[in-house]
Image (cartoon, rainbow, N blue to C red; front, side, top):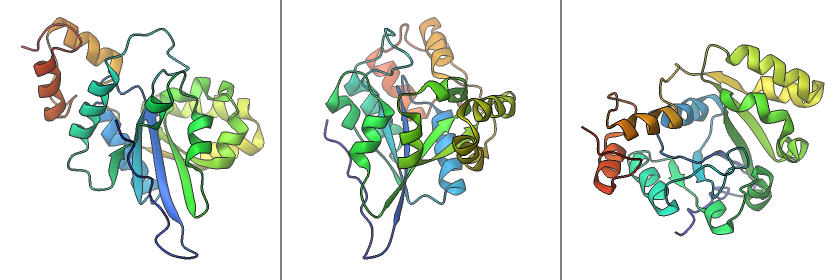
Length: 218
């Protein structure tokens, strides 16, 4: 699974704006794409890398679809997105996929990194490993995905303190709430049912063909 190319600055003295969206993507769904599109506009990003985790530190012990299937589904979901691609560096690194390790690996002169976060990450964000360095290496873009997001943002700001909290609040953007979360989608797949629109059609077809997540869709 070769890692996608990391964009380089287009010329001397110029800066590339690169967004990073990490997660288990188990499976990737339409809400992930909506997040990325909103973040691209809000952060004026040139490109976005979707980075599937080998093992999320926040979901340890939870079963994942095989890495090659999660990558294949991402590639199908992003096939028509010219400025979005998959980077497999966390899968290649193996073990627990710490965000700080990924940022250190991708940091380079002339590339402005932005870390795209769903508001569901906010409650645990202050406890992330090396959170201060994370904010030094990447600007946060927080996509508010639920009605509770504003309150969650306020709590996270307070826990992070004035300096980091102000960086967090400066990077928030709103997106229309999407009903699908990966866990709910998997539960639907296990029952053999799924609402239209929650999954990109190509991903839905791949899951059915491979028999992932339980019963075949009907």
